Image (cartoon, rainbow, N blue to C red; front, side, top):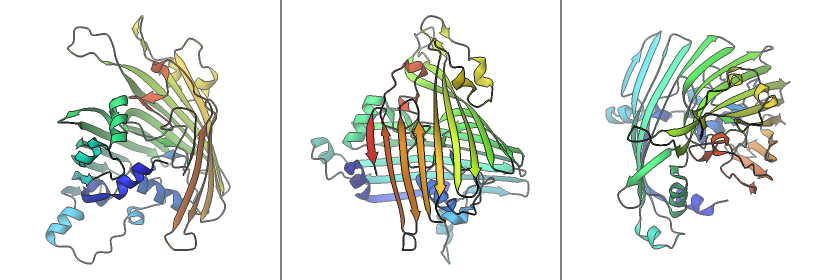
Length: 412
């Protein structure tokens, strides 16, 4: 456990946080942010819930939750200014078959690290200055869309600065540029279109993140790396007991191609396919298998490599069973399990074959006191898989799974 990180967050002594993504409500996908994720986990822990929960983000349309579950507004009165800042959309159109909302995003924070005694920490105020916007809406009852942009400048604690300097990225936020002395300048954009042609079929295309598993961490696919473009299709069968998902994604390294006639060469790219099959066994058990294939898209000898035709086949396990031996593809397979002991207690697990990555966890809701929640989780990996960076399980120098890409043991 990184105690410095916990203390750093606890010592935030100044902050102004006006995040419209939380204020205005969600028309479609619940964000992959920890408060939404954890509230969803506890809600789906009820034995009456029959929702597949091993793949995130959850869709509001496909969900048993509503925005009011997360944010119950108890205020009896708003001034005009407070209502505009904290409650109302900055701009909105609300018709029966068309909704459009536009809101600003702001995140202003400042902190001191009292544990670090270095000159850098003693003379630096660790600030976060983020500004952006979010636009979302829907057309009819089946088509949803969202887009947003966030620009940030930050001064990071020593251990985060070392990570950013070494990996050339801000954790989960992509590439950065220098900002004044010791600062970082970075930005991110996201967006998607989500369509439900039928009640049990979902088609998604966008630029964002995914997550596989029931825990805080994931060995299989985590939201800790940067956004990536991906196409995703899913279908629910057998009266909701079986759910199949397939996704094709575009990833890249931070190694550039040889400089040609352009002023700045492109980064070397790779592709990925993700597939999952989950099954609900009664009301208490959910079992799923998750497959990842990384497809090489660049060769030092021939340049761009065409994408293997198998990548387009939405057949689970096909890539894993037919993986090639000529370094053009790498594959991983893993499993998720969830057991609901009662409405309040869940056990969950995960296993990744290639690294012998194991996860065991328990989640307890209202442990004797209303609102008290307890979660404990153990993660380990016993193998490190060395491979060509152009088929490695990474995106922009960050692993697609657990942030520690080495052998490790972790308890929290």
